[in-house]
Length: 68
Image 1 (cartoon, rainbow, N blue to C red):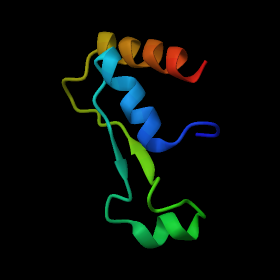
Image 2 (image 1 turned 60 degrees about the vertical axis):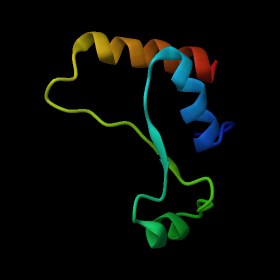
Image 3 (image 1 turned 180 degrees about the vertical axis):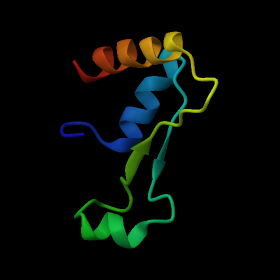
Image 4 (image 1 turned 90 degrees about the vertical axis):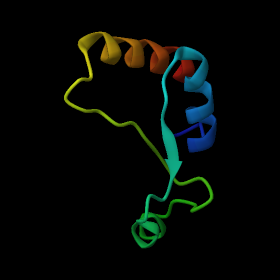
């Protein structure tokens, strides 16, 4: 995301109860080919079959706050 690093985004979501991760996730060559710094990497959010609509609403609210 422009304007915020992956580590900063991940850390900013923690107080909102959102757990996420960042890194290259074993796709280092792809990350480099996309011109992304390997130290910064990409942020990842995981969703599974029991992710609720409330979980998604919480995430969207947190992203709106963090990215504002």
